[in-house]
Image 1 (cartoon, rainbow, N blue to C red):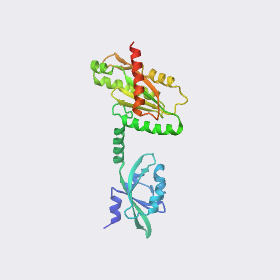
Image 2: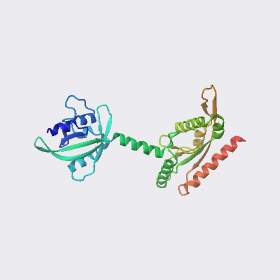
Image 3: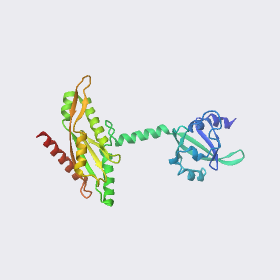
Image 4: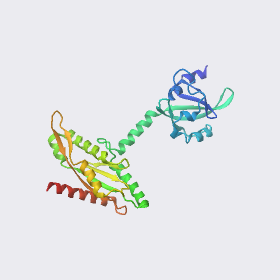
Length: 281
């Protein structure tokens, strides 16, 4: 039986490597590294050159282990000439190739599994309607920001935002339009936040923004910026030339890392309601 032919036709990507250089690959491995059916492809190339730069750190250690028995599978990404990446789980085995010692790398394509795990992790930490971080992720980032504040002495700012009269919009126009209002508010807040800020949907019609290290920004100016962004949110009515206009109320506090987070958020909430009452009078 031609065992080499079996490996060549196997859907499992297989490479033979010696001293970090690729000596032989099967068709599945050529596809994994983005090589066409003709030409030498990756043969003669350094294995490290086929692997994503971020994954090369552990590559030398894995290869040095030389397929030790019971060694756990390695995971890295092969990168093709077009920049596309395939995540693989790799098991190494010592082999003889053309009479000399080498390593065979058996590679399982786990890209779909990795993407699925990434998607599940994103769903667990982000609001499905707006795509913003959810309450859990916001609180985790706030906790980390407080730890940094204890070291740097620069407390973050917490901005609390509430959509005015969302219930009326839902009652008069339906929840789909109410959802469109929430998405529009989320986009407005994200547009005026910095890349390092966290804009989160805290729940229902409530949003919070965590602004770290704002020593150069006056809290009043910060509040004015976010208030202006959501003071006039217009959402078109479906099958109509009209639109619904909503406003939001904003409250802001400079965090006190020594106080319970719930107390700080309650102060921001109270300031938001004062702003809401002031607009109604």
